[in-house]
Length: 386
Image (cartoon, rainbow, N blue to C red; front, top):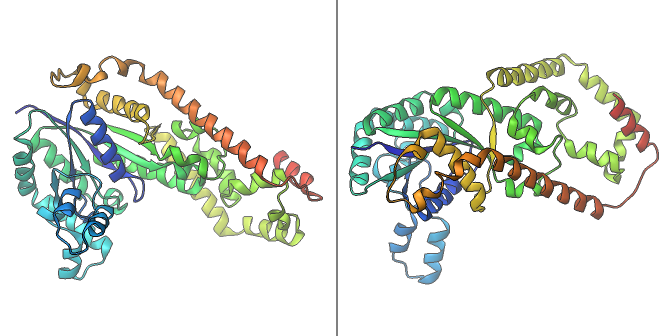
């Protein structure tokens, strides 16, 4: 049996794993690959689109639309919620909560991995060169404490001769929140070490980045993910980039920053033992991520074919797919030639995102009232000097 290539899609809740699986599956099929999604998330219990359309209802077309709205956006090759175990059943039968139920489900899948292997083998046997996308749950404990997911993947790799790459998604919204970005970087490093798979880390939803707050540094600072200790001053200010930006423009909302009582309370907060320990903790976390030096991100807009192509080119390098002769792929999969220039095109993509962020920032500034309260210039200039 020939090796099976694929991706393991991981990331925190809300990072866009299911959307990524849907978009990547469609993109791969356009390239001529037989791509399929396997749902390994026992909490993702929505019915598939095909199952939803088969349900009969007296409400007619409206009921079918409702089914589509609550259905998985992709048609899974195998859904563990329907075939093996799901969180709702575990919660009802064992009296566990959502988190405990999900941990139990993943441990159950690990123990019964032979059954899962036979199901997957039966599904892929009818296809010539299947390419698999594994949609994993996003619960943090599964990657930071539990060993069920790493052991499950290890057994699947050995039993099915899989060539997998872990695709780790992080919401780009975290770039506007220093504490959350530092936490996501630490989680990303931990996940890479525990899964023990080649990993491509991705900043998802970059198309929505212009809707979020301002960034403290250029976007490539976050994609390179080096010198995270530069975020510490923003953590000391409460992590609000927007406040400092608005101080420079003199927005009325921040008159209170000129209040001496407010400034005195802020100084007292910075001298408390809790604040000093909190600051030291963040500094150590930043050092841990920097010392490992494993993390860097690719930007991804799942609706942009060029962005998806750059991520896929990196993945094909990691799992060796680009070196395999796939005769059924269109134009030799279109990436055998393109992957050599993916590094340069990555810089072009980041520059394009920077340009969009700059345009959005200028547009927001032009829409704000140009008011300059007394004393505000001095306050911001003093903060800049410090």
